[in-house]
Image (tube, rainbow, N blue to C red; front, side, top):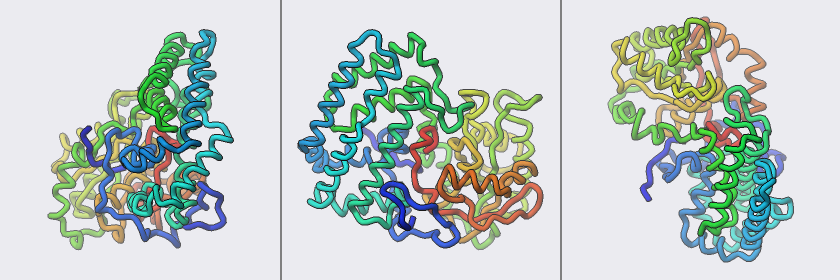
Amino acid sequence: MMCTTLLGCKKEGSSVGTPAIVDTTSKNESAYFNPAQPLIIHNPVQDKNFYFLSILQQNQNLLAALKQDTELKNIYTNLIQRLDKVTADPTSNVSEMVGAAHFTVKEQQDIHTAFDRLVKSNVLSTNLIQELKASGCYLRFEDFNDVVFIRSVWKNVSTGLDQILSVYGEGAPPHDPDSDSVSYTLNDPFYINQVRQTITTITNSDETLFFEPVLQLCLQLLDINNRDEAGRFEPLSQGENVRALSNLSNINWDNYSHSLILVLGDSPNSFGDAIHLSESAKKRLVTAADSYQTGVAPLLLISGANVYPFQTPFHEAIEMKKYLLANFNIPEEAVLVDPHARHTTTNFRNTSRQIYRYGLPQNKACLAVATASHMDYVMSPSFRSRCIKELGYFPLLNPNRLNPTDIEFYPVISALHIDPLDPLDP
C-alpha cells in the first residue's frame, strides 16, 4: 500500500486523558515535536483522527503482540458476538446495531491493563512512544510518563470513536448540527440496510485486532454519510500547497514583518452570493491582496471548508484561491490553503499547524484578515471562551488588532494536538 506524507500540556493535576487547560502565554514549546518527522499515512480520514491506531497497524512486532494478548482477544471475540447478534435480528435499528460497537466499561479497563503491560514490558517500546511524541499529534500529553501517555492517547482515540458512533449511528448532536450532522434519518430503510451490510462485512473480515471492527465501522459511517471531509485534498503538501512549499527555501524572511497573511473564509449563505463564493470572501481577498502587494508577508494562507449550505461540494479556501489567482497579480507560489477548517476557532488552529509542520518562522507574527464584524468576534471574550471550551486552549498568542479588518498574532504549538471529537476536521 502506498504511503503519502500528510500535513495534519503540561500535566497539572489533570485526570488520565484529560489534560489541563493550556496557558499559551506560558507554554508554547515542545521538547519532543520534530517538524522534520513526516506523518506517513495510508488513509487520511483514519490517520488524521486516529494516528495512534495507524501507528499500531504499521508496527509488525506490536501487531503480533496485540493479536496474541488474551485480554484483547477476548474483547475482540465479545465485540464480534455482540455485533453478529444485533445484526442477525431483522428488527434491529441503526442505533441498536451501532450501539453494540461501544466498548464496555470492563473492556476499557482491560484495554488499559493490556496497554500498561505492553508498555512496561517494552513491547510498546520507548522508541515508538518517542515517535508518537515527536509527531506532535498528542502534544498535550507529551510530559506524561509512558504508561500515562499511552492511556491518555487511547482515551483520546476511544472518545473519538464513541463520538462518531454516537453522532452518525445514534443521533447525538455533532459539533455543529447545521453543517456536520448525519445525512439520513436513522429510521431511513436505506440507511438501516447500509449499516447492517457494513457491520456484516466487518464481522466477516480477516481483521482481528481488538479495535479494528469499531474503527472500520466508524470510517464506514463517515463514508456512507459523505463525511470524508478530513481526507479531502490530502496530502496538501503534494497537492494544493506543493507550489508554495517548493518555494519556501527562496524566501528571505528578514524582508517581511509577518510570516503570512491568513484570510478567514466565509460561506456563501447571504443574499446575492454565488453558490461557490460569497461576496464577503471576495472583499477579504481584496484586503489580503493589498497587504501582500505592499510586502507585509511572502505568503497568503486561505482557510475555510465546505460548511454552508449543507454538504456543499465547494470548499471556501479552494474557491477563494481560484478567485485570487484569476483576479490579482499573485503567483501560486505565494498561496497556501487550508480547506478543512469549519469554524473560526479552527481557522486559527490550522494556521498554527501549517506554520509548525511546514517549518515557517514561529517567532514572526501572522496577519489575519476578515471583515470588521468578524474581527470584532475574534477579539471578543466569547470567542476566547469558545476556544477554551472546544479546543482546550486559545489558538492565538498575543493577538493585536491593527485596524478594523486586520489582527496580528503568533502561532500556538498546542494546535498540533489532534481532536477526533471533531472528526470532519480533527
